[in-house]
Picture 1 (tube, rainbow, N blue to C red):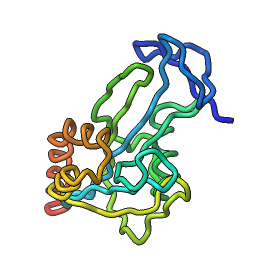
Picture 2 (picture 1 turned 120 degrees about the vertical axis):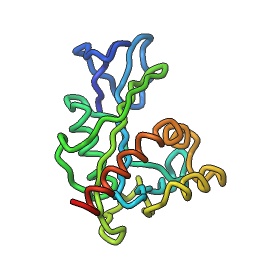
Picture 3 (picture 1 turned 180 degrees about the vertical axis):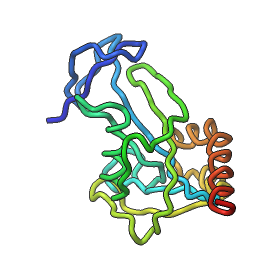
Picture 4 (picture 1 turned 180 degrees about the horizontal axis):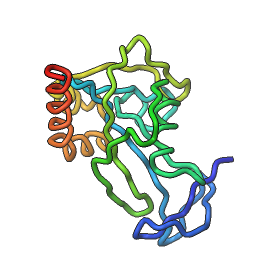
Length: 176
């Protein structure tokens, strides 16, 4: 049985926990974390949702719900490792935004890594594919509805920031 911390509307911990899979009470919120992995060469890492999951067969960035006791950064480091095998210290993740809906606070991160796709370790039952794609390819995947609409919306809102990070990293790699 998994538990999540309960946050208030302002994102403050309440000291209570919520059992995953049960309805949220009015005014209670969970925390979901997501990360865009970029390589500094113009590509983003996408993973495919496994059969049996909601939006099965669609592509996404890594992420998931924070467990009780986890900070946002610890949760994203755990989720990334579980879904891809990529290890990163919590401090390495760059916050690129936050959002909130009816019962969830979202923390969005970026992280530069140049992990070859052959070294990606997929999590059975969670992910069943991985690939590096260009920004143009992400748009093509959105148009073809190969990316679930939630992730597509997130990408479109964060694309400019991701492009800036890519460009800065590219210049560091090139001229470093």
